[in-house]
Amino acid sequence: MSAATASTNLAQAPPPTESIVTLRPKGKAALKQAAEAARPAPPAEKLSLYERQEQELQHFSSLLFGGSALNTAVEFGVRLAIFVVGATNPGGYFTPAPGAASLMHVALMMTAASLFTRVYNAYLEFVYAKCPHYRTQPEVDHALKAKADITGRLLEDLESQNWHDRMTLLMDGVLAIAMMYLNPGFYPGADGPRHSWLERGARLLVHRYVLCFTMYWAHRAGHVVPWLWKNVHGRHHQATHPLSRVTYQAHFFDNFMNAIYGHTFAQIVVPLDHTTYYFNIFLRIMESLEKHSGTSSAFNVAHNLQRFLPYAQMPHHHDLHHEGSKRCNYTFSAAGGLWDWAFGTRKAGRAQFVDCVKQQATPYDLVQTQAANSARAEAEAALVAAQAAGGEAEGEVTVEALAQHNQPDDMWIAVGGVVYDVTKYAARHPGGRQVLADVAGRDATQDFDDVGHTAKARMILKSLKVGTLRGAAATGPKLDEESFWNGHIAVHAPILAMVGVVAATGAPGVVPLCAFCTAVLAAETLVCHFNP
Image 1: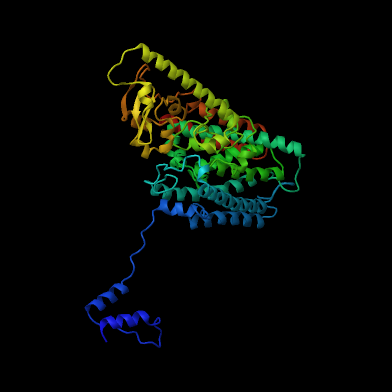
Image 2: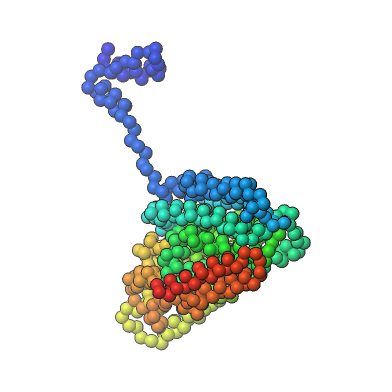
């Protein structure tokens, strides 16, 4: 039998079994063919973390906390430990006051909140994956593929974040047990006082404004005080492109103090009954995840329920805040937009650029964008008039010439009377190429200043200079205007004032709680004073 015949017979033969003798090919060609067939297939190309997360988004995100089995075990282990402490301590240190919830009840609530967070996170990331037209940053590249993580974080950032996640979970349990010990009536029980529906609504609204007030100032401090930004809050902003999975991924002490300044202070100052308290917990989970979801649409249920509130903020406001060290939109909830407005830090973001954001723009967004457009039109008209009156100088660019550079492969912008070619840099822009494309060919001074760029961003811009804008004062990008409230002492003062309000309630346990918060504020202020 020839080698060719043997090969033919092999091709026609049924798959070999124990009862069939496998024919062995003879000859060099057949042996070579057999060796190639026996050679294992090359391993599939290993996907990067970014690519793996992109694929993951097409289904549902991981149900593990931060994708870590250990952290997930810690999370539910802490809840089990709280339950066990409550079950084995009847009549002891952790006995609830009449009408208050027990530690076992608190542990079950925390477990329900953890499970709900996963379900709602999966829902929001499903919307992000399946409805790219609702993304607040356009689907066109957002300059993150060069990094390891889909939200812009490097691999080493993710590894160290795992530790902070673990500590956050542990401190979460510590706070729950501490509050039960300090104030046995802190957690409202089902058999406790019940308010009328009208009173529930009024209390809930005031409660949320109190919650947002202290968290607004703590958040602002984390941005405007250099030491806090570098060592604490900046960790959360390693995610330059928000996605709901990063909502609670921050420095553990940042999360711990926010839990005290937020829910804890608000419940002491404006107590909610059992039903309203837990409604508020789940509403806060929804809007926290939505703020980081990277989408703006009717699918953001919690925010759309509150858009009627004065100066309410939507997810696109917080998305703008996350593009870097942004000194705007500090609020943690839709209602908290009132504090951004009151203290001059509310910015409309992409309310005039991205279609889905235009549809979700609030009435005050429209007021802000119309005012900005009117101011820009007046400034451009004044520039045209100045150019017509003055002579041409070398290195000057006219408004008309600037307007010609507004294509994806040719983008110039003017900031502070200086013209920059951002074409090549657009691919590395943390906010994405589209953000620059939206302002290409015109004066983008107001847009640049509104979002509060870092000193590093100003240095990069300086290196892209091509000339000056004729008729304009060539000042370049200005430094952020330093408000009195951005001082390391002043920015902590409103938090200290709220600590005083909490102490004045005379509720059980407020003395040690307020003493602890005062010590933290004093330590922060001293550290920031000696490390400017």
